[in-house]
Length: 336
Ligand code: UT7
Image (tube, rainbow, N blue to C red; front, side):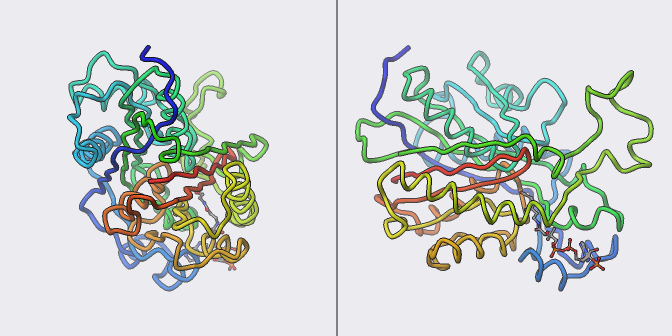
């Protein structure tokens, strides 16, 4: 234990996306969809798909190396890894331990977070709490996902398949003496009554006597199932609510926020959220057109891009917000 600290801040960020670009036209060759439908309903133009060389753990390790370089620290200084994913390399163990081994950090604490699209924000909150409590000094937060090996490339799965892409993001969290800088608040929520609105039914340990029923490919229960309209409506309600809650907790108003970095699930959702809040559309980060929905990686990728292209500078007040399967939803306010 190193003793309580006033606050923690994001010391550096990084991301990695695999090189293979898959356009809407590429998908339209595999099942009944069109570039026009996908762009109009979601804003997505293309996404990245991974290969054997880039499983969840490897992409996470690459993103973390970039975040450490950005923070100006040696990877060896990391003393804890918190990794959000819904697509771990294996059912168990989690992927955080695999990242640890890849980076030669054997012995340090590792945690996998199973919170889907809010995984990056839940992981940031855990890292912040660890640092404030004096448990650790350089916590790696990672969101990494491989969707492309688990989606349904048939007409039945088209509503979900067009939305998702692969990629990873990371942040390094450490202590600061300045209470006005860093992570100022986190609002974390969940409502398990929505669990089956966006989920993968199989395989699962509640199936007896075998968790992987032989029928799961034939009945397509091995693929994500989504009530798209319900998720859309619910996101448009909960995101403004949790952003306002986070503002109230810090005493800031929307006018103080320099940039909103939301989860990239659908461009229309984020535009609607800004409209409902009365927040300027040009202060909302969008990159869904290039990557689709990368779930636990999405907020981290958007955050890293906004830092690298100068939309976030020292002193910027940034709101991160996400929602997703669970249901879960969250917002974090950060002063850089
Ligand atoms: O991180 C959280 C992840 N999930 C989300 O955020 C999802 C939120 N929901 C959405 O983004 C939208 O509901 C979708 C983009 C998934 C769908 O848009 P929508 O405007 O709600 O369309 P819909 O589901 O009502 O479907 C409209 C039509 C249907 O055809 P009919 O019944 O009107 O003839 C669908 O069969 O579009 C059809 N459709 C497609 N057509 C071409 C559904 N998926 C596709 C597709 N290509 N990929």
